[in-house]
Amino acid sequence: MPGRTWGASAPAKVILLGEHAVVFGKPAVSVAIGLRLRCQIRPGTISSLNGIPLGPHDHSYVSACLAKHNAPPTAVLTDSDFPSGSGLGSSAAVTVALLAALRSSKDGFKEDLVAREAFEVECEVQRRASPIDTSTCTHGNGILVQRERGENFLWEISRDTRRWCVHDLKVPKMTLVVGFTGKSKPTGPLVAKVKRYVDHNTFARDIVDEIGDVTMEGVRQMAMGDLEALGRNMTKDHKLLAILGVSSRELDKLVSSVLPYSYGAKLTGAGGGGSMVALTDQPQ
Image (cartoon, rainbow, N blue to C red; front, top):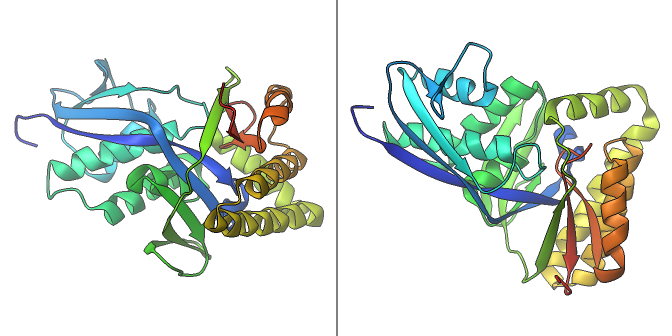
């Protein structure tokens, strides 16, 4: 990284269908949205983030990215259009943007390698993850993650006994409205909470299976451009996620408030706070 500045950016994302279930190998659908996180790197005397020295336990995602590339002391600068903990993929975006900048400083950006490395970083930090966020922030557009290879296949990612095939997904013209609760929750503990529930409860496993079925229905509805049916499935997905215990009073209130004006709405991301996404033709 000889004496110059390298930069990259990554988009925010919203998961339309399938969060949490995707961690167990079920399908999920996500789309990139028009908010971005920008990252610049340059050589430094010590590694730092936005001028603050990085300690061994500070800013886990940034530290893990630098360690993965055995980076020399590096000054990292970030600027984001969206807050962390909002359910819009802030950890995935900073991970992808930083890894893309690090790769560009050496042998150039390679989309599939960045997606795989970003997933590995999220697994390292969160202990359990899926590639839906990191693949969406790497590739943009719409993303379908499922077990089998299908049309518009991009890459495959494996972990333990789980396998995800990542696909580019054509997204029909739609209007999404995102509402932030103002409360942030870290992803890792929520993912771990659902895993404990699923590991010890057959009912929870049935809910995860049902989320997978709802997601594949949504994929077919997107292909047909049937936004009303897609919205109904988003609302159904929210109710299933609430049963898994990852909604909140604030999220439920936001969803209820927009349902009269939308095709459907749901929490997006890990839940517990963060954001809601609504599919609507009345964005005002």
